Length: 97
Image 1 (tube, one colour):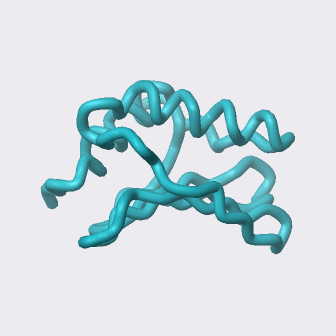
Image 2: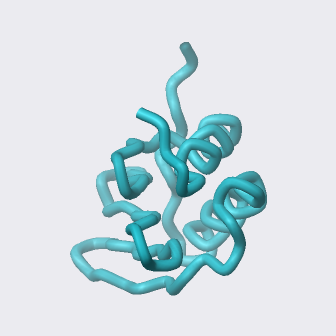
């Protein structure tokens, strides 16, 4: 499945950073360690990309992503990981293939 909204590029940047995630047609889910929750990057048609975080049953809107997902995928992936760590949670690291 190919995405014109930059989700493919962001997914590749997350994999390069060893962050396990699931790519869907309009979003990416990044699971948190110890089943604490997940972060969701949404790229819905007609809306700017946005991020939300669910931790221990609490949902938080982290706002819109100003940059183009395709052009700035690496920087966005790094920033998402940093935002998680600043909130005291870690993404699941992918298993070696």
